[in-house]
Length: 83
Image 1 (spheres, rainbow, N blue to C red):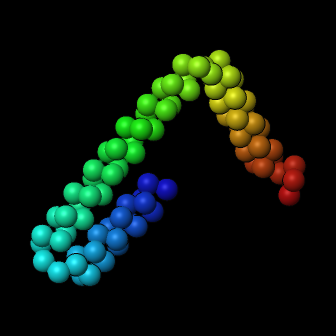
Image 2: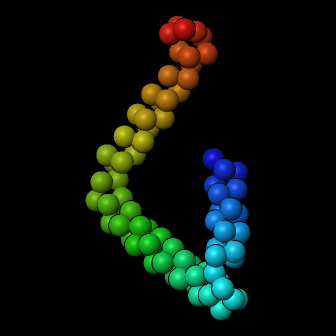
């Protein structure tokens, strides 16, 4: 997934450099993307912190259940139970 995301970002960057006229436009686009990403990341961390403090036990329990379920699913697939 990380490699696919990096390739996608590279393609988007090359496409932006072709579409935008001049270095000023590219810098403006990079600055806008960086600022928006920072703001949304900070908001996500804050929301996660608030909900994490409020629903800590439930979040840990549900995360554990999901991980165990994924492990069981992978085990069943590798054993060939469902073809």
